[in-house]
Image (cartoon, rainbow, N blue to C red; front, side, top):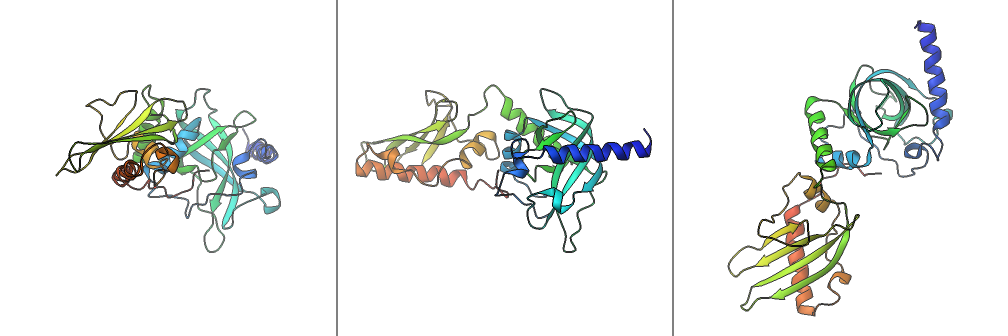
Length: 292
C-alpha cells in the first residue's frame, strides 16, 4: 500500500469512526456525562479492583501496538472531559486475551487522552497497550468500554489481566453480589458466645452466605460459603481474589434495617456488630477510578 493510499484509508476510517460515535453506537463517549478521567497516559498503580472492573465488563480484551494517532478537532470530537483530547487510534493487534468472535489484525478506536500543562497529548505511537473493548459497528472498529480502558501492556500487567479473566470465566466463579438479604443471630448458652448468618443477594440467584462465630476469649471467626451449606472448609476470601473483589467492592458498609427486621433488638445489634467484623476484615475495595 502506498503512503498516499494509507493516508486516504486513515481519513476514511476516522470519518467512519466519528460518524459511528452516536449515543446509540458509542455510549462510552457520547452518552456518559460522568466521564472517568485518568491523571496520566500511564495509569500506574491501578488496583486489582480497577482491572477487575474493566475485565468484567469487556467482551474483548487484547494487546495492541499503536501504529498511528490523529487528534480529532474539537468541533468533531463531541463531549470530551476537561484536560483531555479525543484521539483516533490505529493499532496492530499483537494478542487476543479475550474475545469469542475474534478480532481484526488492525483495529481503530477512539481514546480520550489526558493532556499536559501545555495541552499536549502523550506520545503513544508505537506504545504497547491493553485495551478493554467491545466490537464496533464496522469490521476493524472497536469501542473502549470506558474512556480510560487502555493501559500499558507491561509483562506483569498482561499476566494480571489474564489471571483475572481466567477467574471470571471459571466454572466456579463467584457471582456478582447485588446486596444483602436476611440476617439471623443465635446467642450461645454462655456470655460472649453466638453465631450470625447473613445471606447475600446475587445477580444470578446463586446462594452466598456469611457466617460469624464468637467464642468467649477468642477473636470472632468468619467465613463465606458459595452454596446452600456452610461447611467446615469455608474460609474468608483471599485478599486480591475474585471473591474478595466481589465482596469488598459490592457490600454496603453497614447492615441495612431490612436485613434484621425480623430480629429482636438485641439480636439485631449483635448481627450488625458481627457484620462489621466482616467489613473490617475485607478492608477497602481499593478502586482508584470510578467504574462507568
